[in-house]
Length: 111
Picture (cartoon, rainbow, N blue to C red):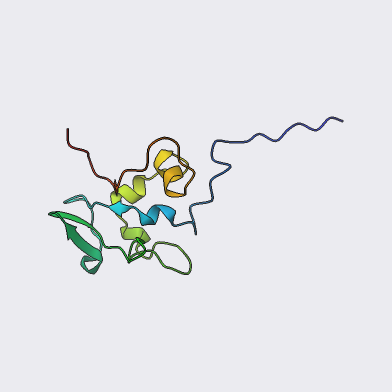
């Protein structure tokens, strides 16, 4: 009997989301009237409300031991929409392609 090669997927080289936390080091802009995160976790940058970050860039909602979100049920919409193995994910974990990752998750570059 001849063994068939295992099928691989695009995301085989990407760690599982749970416990990774690399995307939690991107600046997260909060959407007005959409995001309802604890106010003590919010800071303002140039008039834009964002998730606060620790000195190492980690979101204040990221548990440093488990590397899981402590406000998962209330996490910002941009975090809910973030897709494992897509370009920004790969850039966050250092396996990116092309130019460096944008500085903020959820920001919209002005023309």
